[in-house]
Length: 383
Figure 1 (tube, rainbow, N blue to C red):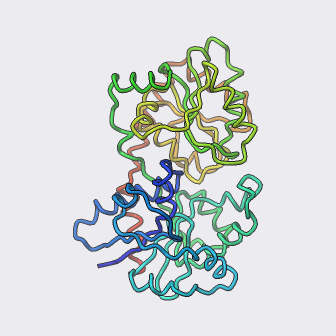
Figure 2: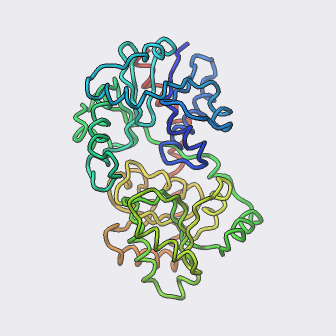
Figure 3: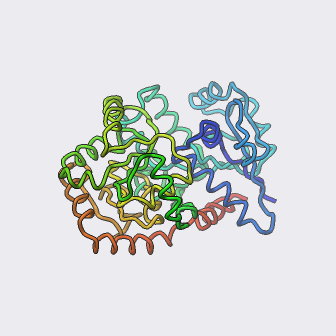
């Protein structure tokens, strides 16, 4: 039996806080899927968290027994980054596992156990000014060095792979591309009654534009709002803009504006939405707008496809690799272009139907089962 330690630090934190970022969603879906595809009980997944803190009941129910490395781990990890040596006590973990999988950028230095790490993208190194300022320089140096001592890297798109080769100084041979999947719950049709109830809860009417994602600079929400506000008043009254996501960082002025705008009747900012409410809101939307400046993949695009709504998104970075010809592309730096495409999609029924059909066909190529199986193929190279 192959014993795989899985880093669950970000996932546990997300479950405890009640909301998860993309890395948390990725880790959760893989963890759940690994258990369904191992029919011969040849694998044992062991959750490992770096630094001890109170774990939620939800995390315990999902992950079972969790190995918590001591609270001193962050300091010891920093020492490892500087010295290049593993820290005392890590050998205890190595005795428990045959391989360590780091899906969340917490990459330990192990002396006798192979490490496979996921790097979603090279965004922090390419655009350092667009990531959090707190310990930015050290974090980027540490991330790069820790990534280099992994035995193998998994990334989520060919675009990200080329960026990682360039900015992390890691050879192509050490990198495997494994696309993400889409949660099957998005594919299930929500009843009209449920959609009506959810819309009523948030004082919404159906056929709105929807954006989903953490509010941070690269998501380009300022231009989206600028574009939306330039649309004809009648169109905005008919099709509100609904922004779903927690505030991240670096957009204080935008946050103040959103706090003001969400009291109007055409722009809504929903910070706390359950999974079930999210499925209903997606399927109640006229179209999804995702004008991100940089994506290593762009999972919300697949969620839009699965929800059977047309998707308007950027023509940059990895997005065309994921979206193919199933979306309406925009120049994310041009608010006038964003507005024009939103108006076009809103007014062209035939275009929307074609986009929905193409999106539905496209999403069939992406599943967490396929993704998990391809992860396991990488793991088996080291066992």
